[in-house]
Every structure is written in C-alpha cells, then in structure tokens.
Image (cartoon, rainbow, N blue to C red; front, side):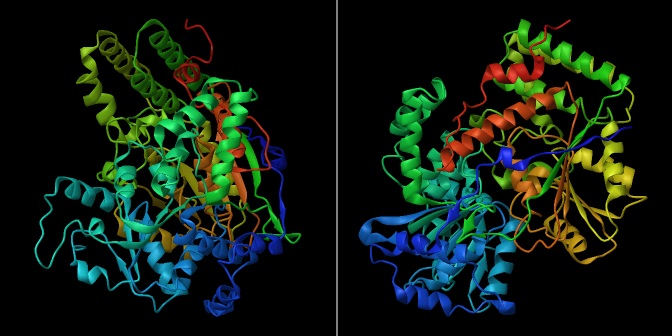
Length: 611
C-alpha cells in the first residue's frame, strides 16, 4: 500500500494573523472607567502555582470579562471564544476570584459531561486550592438550598440541568425542608458559565431551554466554536445571554438568518446581515487565535501543526462494495420520496461503506446514555438525530435505523420499501469481512512515529476503534476512551496515556473525547474518518495543539478519494468560510449557506446517475 503524505499550506486555509496592541486592548476595557488600576492590582496579586503568571492575552481577557459584568451599564456577560488551548478555563476562574461580591451568591459552571466536570474541579484545586467547590452530579447530589449557598463554585453537567429542569417545569420535584431535587432552579446564581456552549446551539434542544431558565446576574458562553453549522447556532447564545434584539428569534431570523441563507454571499442583503451580526458579536464576544500576536509577540509560542492528507485507495473488492452501495442508495433517494431524516440514515450507511469490516457495528452498553449526557443538538443542525437529539453515529443509533424506521416511518410506503431494500442489499454485500487500506495506513503511520512520542487516534465510530485496537495491540500498547465506558474507566485511560511511558496510543471517540480534554502528552493526531463539521475536527486537534505542548504536532487525515468522504471535504470548506466570516472581523470571505437537503443527497449520489 502506498501512503501519500501531502503537507498543506495552513496559512491558505486560515484567516491572517492579527497583531494586537495590548495597550489598546486594555484601553478598550478601561476607557469607560469601569476597570481601573485596582482591578489590575488585584489581578497581579493572584498567586498561580509553579511560579506561573497570566499571559498578556489572558490579562486582557480577564479585564474584558470584568468590564462585561457591569449592571449599571447593562452589561451582563458575554462570549469567551478564544481558540482551543488559550486558557479559557483559567480566565473564567480568575473572574470568579476577582469578583468583589463573590461571597454573596455561588457561581455555577455547566460543562458537557462528567469527565470535563471533573477536569474543572481539578483545575480549581490546582490554581485556587482554597476555593470551596461542589461537583453537583449523580444521585447523591441533592442538597438543601442552604448547603448550595456555602460553595463559591458549583460544577455540574448539561444532563443534570436538563433533568432538574424537567422537575422544575412540572413543579413535581420531591422537596422537603432539607432536600431540593431541582435546586439549580431555586438558586439565584451570581453567574452561570456554559463551557462548550455550542452544545446549546439548537434553540429547540432541551439543554438550551433548561440553561436559559437558570436565574443569574451574569451569563457567560465559553466556546472556541460558537458557530459550527449555520448562523442560527449563534441565536441560542444570544438568547441565553439575553442580548436584544438578537435574542428575539423572529428578528434574528428575518434580519440575519434568512438573508444569509437565501441569497448569494456578496449581495447587499447578505452583506448587511453579516455586518449587523458582526456588530452584535463585537459587543459581547472576545476571540483570540493561537496565531494572533500581541505587541508583535505570538500569543501562543507554538508552531502551527503540520497537516497531512493520507489518501487511502479502496482496493477492487472494497470499491465494488462501495460503488454498489452508492448506486443503490442513489436510486433510493432519486426515485423515492424519502424524508430528510431517512436520507441521513442512508448517508451514514454510505460512510460506513468506506470503513473496514462488514460486520455490524453494535453499541456498547451505556453508549447511548453517554451520548445523551453530552447533550449535543437535535435535528435542526440537519445532520443530527431527531429522536435522541444526538449527532448520528451509526453504532449508537440502531434505535433510529431499526425501530424508528420500522415503526413511525414504516407508515410511509416509500420509506418502508427503502428500508427493506437497503437491509437486504447490505446483508448480501457485507456477508464477509473486508480488509481495509485504512487500517494499514494507521499501522504505517504508527510505525513511523518516534518511540518517545505518543498518538491519539480519533474516529466517529466506536466499533472502528475496536477494530483498530485488535489490529495494533500486539505492536503498540494502547488504551481506549469512548462514550460506552464508565467514567472511572475513561479516567483510567487518560491516566495511562499521561503517566505510563509504555502506553503509546490513545484510541478516542471523536464525540466523547474531542472537546475539553488536555492531551498535550500526545503530539500526533490521526483522524481516521472525516467529519462534515470542521469545527469538531479542530476541537479534536486542539486537545494536543494547545498551551503546555512542547513538541511539534502532526495531524494525519485519512480519506478515500471518489467517495462520500471527498465530498465531505467540500462541505468542510463551506462551513469554515461561514465561521470565519461571522466570527473573524478581519475576514471578508463568503458567508456560505448551511447544508441543505439537496446537498445531503449530492453527498450520496455524487451527482452520478444511479446504474
């Protein structure tokens, strides 16, 4: 097998670096007299462990956040949107510590999952060991409102917020004089900070609705990727922050979303909509990138990661299978009147067609529960499951493909026929296992990595990780991290990759481990399969390419040409342009439309007529 490595010019794909003047940045937050020398003096008195100091961009960020907590000027928070690895957690905690009224009410930190919640409590203990902190999670979390008031910081998850919100809405939570089972919604918080806030980007998501109902003086969204799919992602953040008129959905839809969706990017209505959006973000968001400069010094003294595309040619037997799948699926979507939901199911089956081994990818026990705990959005991002509100992952969504299609969708004659036809056809094609070039590529890459360096391997499919593990474990000691594992098992895997010099490879589910974690012990990243959202991939890469990394980072993207994956690459570029246009004020590129039904069909058909 020939593995082709193609170094990419990253500067061509990224917006230009910006040289920020630290003095002018500080002027911006001090000119109204709110942030004064007293704030700077108190900030300088915060003692960090190991002789560490706040970086210049962190000082500017902390002072900006303090300036956004000013009720007199009707400033009640904002969006901290620094790129991955620039210390958003530390900046947020510093604001809590510097709050002159921090003792009057507790601050609440909401994070995606329990592993990240534990990481927050670890960071608090590391940087501010005297801070009273409560990890609010699990069946034993329930406490009295009086006890809740004793903590300066309470850390919880979106899953807990959702669960308590359901009790709060029904007003049926079991309450006594000592215990409150929806205490989060009976506490008046000093501030609520949503980590990985893009988790609420779907306005109809239960997590979004629950978080918006929390009562707080100040509200913060912490995310490196505030925009992932469409400009509609930003509406939920504005709504949570209660920023008018952007928090008014009808206004946002008519003024921002529709003009950017229906017209060409450079038409006047789209340009005006983008300008208005930038003005709104400019008031409530601070965003710095790793390749920006402050006073001509790079914010993060870390070289750009080196990116390689690894082209995996499908051998003739796999190409035969894949082409047969594509032709059959193309016929289904062009000849039958299928719902967008069902077409997405076919798309996921087609993605599986470029993966190794024809055996069914069954979920591990607990995988669905963990996926739900992560609280990722629902169907409105157009590529997500309308039943469980999780991003489609084939191995964890048999309930969608089997019971739901056979049940609710089977009432539609075309879709029932498509389902039956697809099941029978796939069974015939995939009756025997296939050996994939993709596995050989992973083995080849790992064999070239120096013995003293470590690798994290990401895949969208848990079963793919299982297959890789079985293929490489005789040569490379590896551990796994995915949503089907217990929190204690995942923590054990992280400890092993960080502390055991013999463990060289971490196999990680893209959705379970692609956000929030610090994996600077690894400096090689293998993306086994492409994801249509580049923000998700950037988040995954950001686990290694971040503050604290001392080595050159290498990223390897595997994909098969002339398949659905090559078309996914085109979508990635479209989404990158949209995010850059909205979030990076020095960028003048296209806004780019969202992924529409016809584009999903094109992913399947490749504009080819089915044979």
